[in-house]
Structures are given as structure tokens and as C-alpha cells.
Length: 198
Image (tube, rainbow, N blue to C red):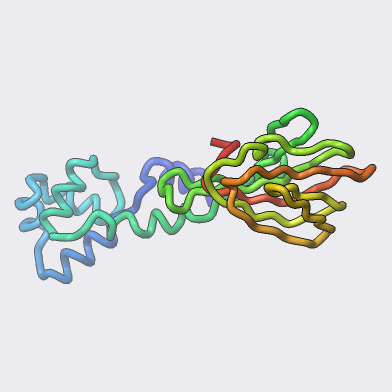
């Protein structure tokens, strides 16, 4: 991609033009009719359709109303493009609770609470354990042990988990992960709703 193309993409982040044009043509409307209905110039509508300019939100609302189309239809493609979220290994956020470390490996979806979760790599040094779940919290947890052996203490029970084992449980009851071995343990953990990286 050339520098000019990059600048163009930054200048016009949302490309509605083709959808607006197709909607207009499908309804058999001219540029002039749509412009009059939206209260803007015919020239502006033409430039928007060709992605030469990015419309102000009030103009976009007026055009959508003039064409009788839903805004979700216009933003759908943009939302699909944004579904892929990447965290580069050197950009991971991390935090520590005593000796236990958590490295974020998935960005929480803060737009839709029903889909909100967080995922991280837990590293638990020898002879240590997690703390936050000691009294329980809302939500659900899923994990897989990627290195070593750990003991999950859940309510009054203990479950030994070895490398490759996975587990899931409601987070409302008291729970901790304890490393009783002489080597560090690593696990990938998913929690919903997010607890740490929010």
C-alpha cells in the first residue's frame, strides 16, 4: 500500500459510498432526488458515493433517512473488519498479584456485556497460589494447564490438574489455584465477565 493510499484510508475510515449508491439505484432514485430529501447538495452526495469525502454524522443520518435504510446496514462491513483483534507478544498487558503473574492474550469486548470475557496466561511460581477467587466472584471460568501440575481448590474439594488438562466452573464459589510443585506452572485462563484487565 502506498503512502497516499494509507493517508486516504486514515482520512476516510468508513466507506459507505458503494452501499449508498447501490441502495439509491435499487430504489430507482436520482442523485438530485436523494440530495433534496437529505437537504444537501447533489455534488456532496456524488462525492460521498465515490468515497471522496466522509460524511458528517448528521449528513449520514439524513441520507439513511432519505434512502430508508438502517444505519446497521451501513456500518456492518466496518464492524466485521474490526472483529479481528491482535495482541502482539511484546504488547501484552500484564499484572501481578504477589508472585503470580497474568499476561493478557485477548481484548475484552466492552461493547456487548453479554459477550464480555478476558483471557490471559497465568504463571504461578513454585509454592504459591492465586488469591482473587478466594471468596468467589460473579461469572464463569475456563482454563487449560499448559505447563506443570496445579491443584484447583474449589469450595471444600481439591482437583489435581496436569499439563493438557482443562477445567471449567462457576466463579461464585471460593476457588484458588495452588502450585505445590518445585517448578513454575503456566495455564491459559478465560474469565467472563472480565475481572482483571478492565
